[in-house]
Length: 389
Ligand SMILES: Cc1cc2nc3c(=O)[nH]c(=O)nc-3n(C[C@H](O)[C@H](O)[C@H](O)COP(=O)(O)O)c2cc1C
Image 1 (tube, protein in one colour):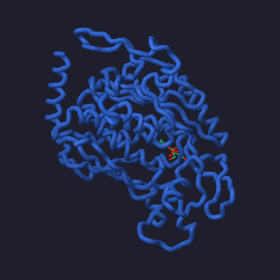
Image 2 (spheres, rainbow, N blue to C red):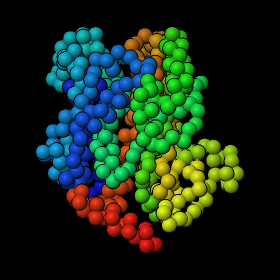
Image 3 (cartoon, rainbow, N blue to C red):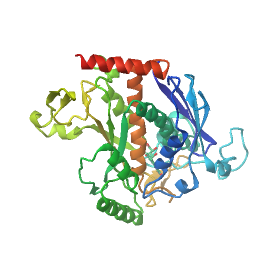
Image 4 (cartoon, rainbow, N blue to C red):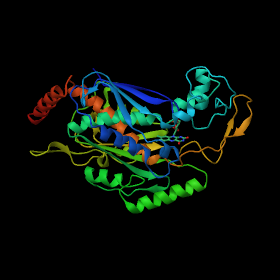
């Protein structure tokens, strides 16, 4: 059984829902850790008021008993706390009332799914598009990824995320061990390790906000402790780097993805790109460097996976952009709305979780079993095979 999940739910509906299938039985879930990940997504300098209204928590409503997975599908719910204010607007029953009462949207926002979705699904109320296309959905994806993270954690695989750039401000490179990286970024309002960069980024976000604008950036995810051989070279859709790229691009507002040095590889000669192979009794096969970000041939090579994604600036601006009303076909300047000026730190948390999911999925494809114990045996025997190679 391959690991899979689906999500449902709208940004102002009662809840977001996910069903995960393919988790083994006997995985101990840490509910506090799950909710901690949801809280991490809500933090970050530059976020708007909604993040203060909503305090996300996940409720598990299937597939777990007495703290352990049973092997049945795991159902998760993240409630939308301000739904009470939207009960009528989001009612699943037909309602009467004016467009205004229904909060009908007829003015598509540039940079959003509004117009494409309205045209494609033949919807004259663009709320039916924006409610689902909203990045609120990333909350449930973080909840799903948090479970993947716990599965990986059981096998000693650690995941960290950090912000590399916000607009013009770039964080200086560092070589911190992963535990230190995790604790330092956790204490930063913009998820960087360097306090000086944090100050610069905060000031930069303030300036952008004052100008009525928004700003994007670059985020990075590092996965350490991954065994050699997740993913496969034999078929296009089994290449794990390709799957990760798809997952990263599926995060709202992400416009590009890099593995390792990524686009730099197009500028440098081969001698400065490829990672030389070394062998020692202690470490077995390993690499002299990790410029290729842990992948060759669509398979992990035992070095940390390093993935970067670029987030465009948030499209809802205080500074209005030109658009066209779908009722009148007349141009208008999009109305001023309450929105985040920068969600790059939150996006870094989302990145960690979508990457965790893809790695967990490949992990179970390689070592899959119905129970955690069966997977443990499979991992052990594979590691012995590598040792005797
Ligand atoms: C964590 C996060 C928070 C976001 N918050 C907002 C927001 O407050 N306002 C907004 O207009 N877009 C926000 N976005 C971006 C939009 O959801 C996204 O641009 C839109 O759905 C269109 O999708 P696309 O940019 O992938 O084409 C956010 C994205 C992420 C990842």
